[in-house]
Length: 431
Image (cartoon, rainbow, N blue to C red):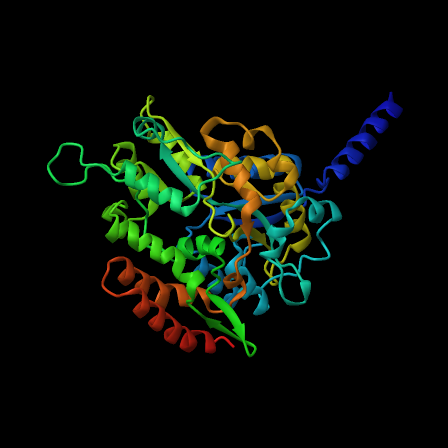
């Protein structure tokens, strides 16, 4: 009997050791994780991943903390300066490259397994690749800009939607928008617009979609980053101005509103299409659309190509983190095939793992997932993602100038002249 008790005790000790628990009651390692998830389903998905980790890893416990997207940059800068950093934090690839250059982040290159490196799309890795080929963040979510359309209004107008195999060009979009723009009651005013485009904060949308025209905006001349607004950069701006002020097929409602604020008007039938809206917006339609409202997703429009720029959302470990090994183990768990898929579906975005995106949740025709997911093959890393000073350039210069342009207060020539001149002053400070 005594032997049996000793055997049981030995097995118990072995079990506790294998699970990382301490027989002496040693406190677990605590990993502080800052998340930017904000939509209800996204928060639930992230918390499920954290709970699953904590349940199976008693020796390493993850403490979940939520920070707002609008506050994260200042939050992290303060953390880096004080040394009171989270062990893992969620952000996006553009500022991550700046943080890495300033020495704030841990080089994850030696930690990344061959399986993870091979499974995540090469284009996603490009968004986080620092000088010298080092990687300071794992990209795990990305999005495309899509077109949401009203199926009933298309049917009533006799318009056949494009397919993945035969996508529309921007000319096709403009023709359809003309057909869908109507004065329904004959009072001389437009009641139904072909499109509404959220232009309150237009820079990322315009630059990402300009990639399809070959418009890069940012170029390197003499070893310096410069901004040029040539024919390729002007192409999309010209189309948007024509839709607003020549054909008048784009609702002026979009001038002072972001894309989410246009969804009520879309559901009311005021706009037939919402071009250039983020793929995540489908969740709002699912949650708010009447049961009988029919909507769908159109493939990316073709200019020279169907390419569009896209940054990625990332997980990183600060250089000053105290529990780097434990933090990395949690990242590996959180970004496994199934856990990455869970978080992407919760956020209505795309996972960067190829094995994740092949799962049924991303290929179903329900809620336009199949068409939306197909757009991943057109995502590209835009050149400005590696330009130091881009955030300041966008906020201080490009946004107000584009707002003036779209409000028709300056011409396209004036916009081009002023943005090129102002860019030199900002970018030269980051050389």
